[in-house]
Picture 1 (cartoon, rainbow, N blue to C red):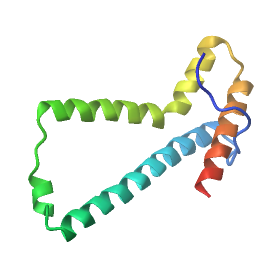
Picture 2 (picture 1 turned 90 degrees about the vertical axis):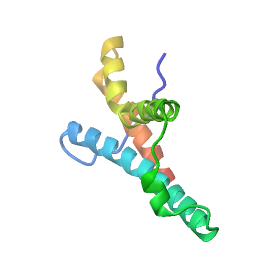
Picture 3 (picture 1 turned 60 degrees about the vertical axis):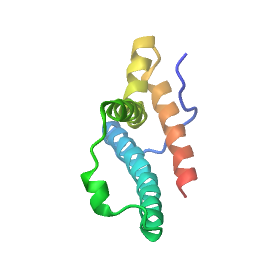
Picture 4 (picture 1 turned 90 degrees about the horizontal axis):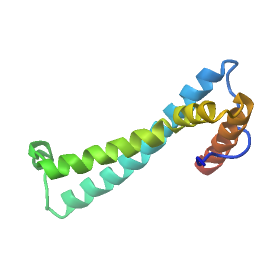
Length: 117
């Protein structure tokens, strides 16, 4: 059984496809916002303590093990970003109705909106 949000998601546009794209973009925006804050904190701490310069960061080249870790993270990240699309495909494959899917996605979006405000 797949994990899906329950309830209705608010609809902002007549075309449900536009709402799906908006949900994906907002998921990316949320992820980037958190990442940006954490990165800013780290750079400020490193700079204030004289541990690392921006030139050091620019010159850094990860080894193969680190690249593999990063690739695994990227795969998981894209799964989260594209979850709306994945859930729709799972619903279609399992025979669930389009309306059940729409209701679940709408409720999930509502929950996300409440968390963001």
